[in-house]
Length: 192
Image 1 (spheres, rainbow, N blue to C red):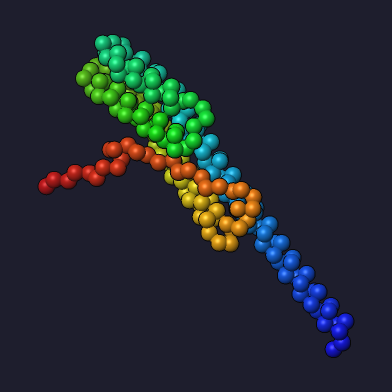
Image 2: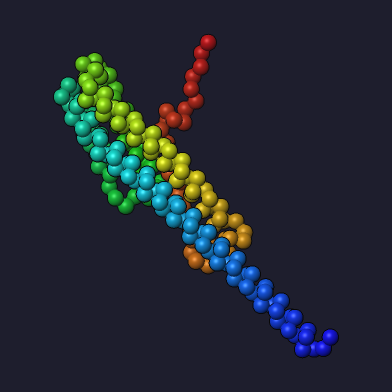
């Protein structure tokens, strides 16, 4: 074998390695972009359901007001919590905190409603309560989907070798959207 043949073989190997590295780099970058877009899409879906929840609350408050007009403090608390939760521009962690406060205020509103059997029997109130429950279920499903995508993105951003590409193009960890409702976190009591 002469020197020219060896140089051609070395050149082919170097070009092949460079092409493989380029394909790996592009695939890693595209994978990060795909997961980041999934996280953003999942957050938009949660936002849609949160807005639906925020839109249901005034109707629910009005239903209860008709029966319990003297419970002004509870209505004001729900209104303040709803306004804070509906304000745009919050990060997922901030939004979760605001939604938790709204959930607590709604819990107090439902406690007021419990004192009025005629209200609880009202078809309008029952329908609003069902809609709110269905919306809460969709928010919970959206939260699970969003958090799964956040986990995937964060794993890619932190693990080797994809973290090299993530650092080069400023991909960042995403925040989880976590429920802090004490009733959700509390273990159920069992008695025999």
